[in-house]
Length: 106
View 1: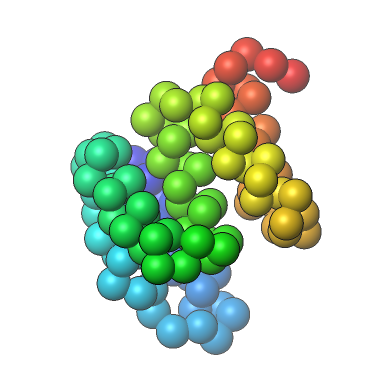
View 2 (view 1 turned 135 degrees about the horizontal axis):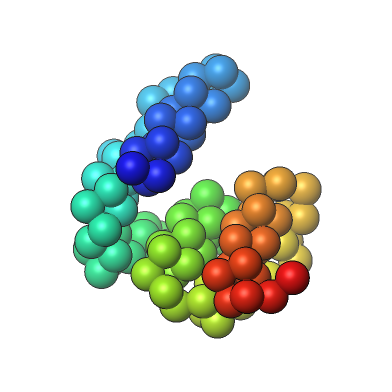
């Protein structure tokens, strides 16, 4: 349910900013995460990251999937690396806060 909500919010934000519809990889990752198929979602993200390792949206998806799948130390590290490069995106700060919350850290 939450994944579906996140997907809908993401689409509305993209449309509001005048961007085109989601690339094919994003649509497939969203389908896989809605089904909680973390391994398949991560394969897609990893494939795309091999093509564009500095793509911040892909890295954010990577961190989200790590979080959702329970790989919290890895997610924390990924968010830390993202924020070291792009500290102005509140979604990434919220993602890191979510990791801390799931770890029971304040």
